[in-house]
Amino acid sequence: MPRMVDVSGKKVTLRRATASAELRMNPRTLRHIREGSLPKGSVLSVARIAAVQAAKETHRWIPLCHPLPLESVKVEVKLVPPDRVVIRVETVVRARTGVEMEALVASAAAALTVYDMCKAVDRGIVIGPIQLQSKSGGRSGNWKRVSKSR
Figure (cartoon, rainbow, N blue to C red):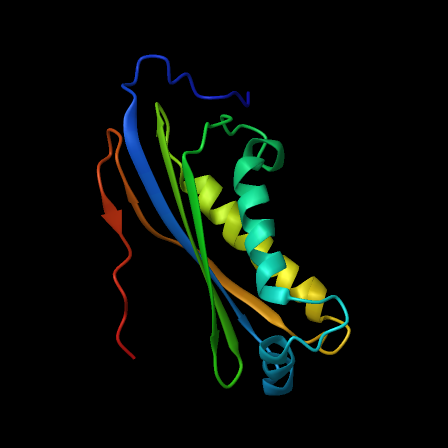
């Protein structure tokens, strides 16, 4: 039977998580983003706002997630010529449970926002991967994604 995990016995600790999302698109679409020439306006500004809003509302997106009093949400959106947008979100909280889902949901929301704002000129945009990059704090300690060399 599904249930929210009981975290009442855990210590409150500083917890941090970083997640990322990537989008691949037509190089012309990336130029439109850089030039600010898309019909819906500033793609990167709206994506940042979407990420923060989604992080704060993660418990509404993910059914068994605890609501968390986030202390910080940092969003970085980079244009990587010729055809990529890379989003990186860091979330921080002092709580009894981790903040990974908030970072992942924020990254996904920012990526979906970029797609929404660009779909008028490029419906072929591909989103992914969306992935946890690192987490710290809590009983399980620290974890960091190991990059594979190409």
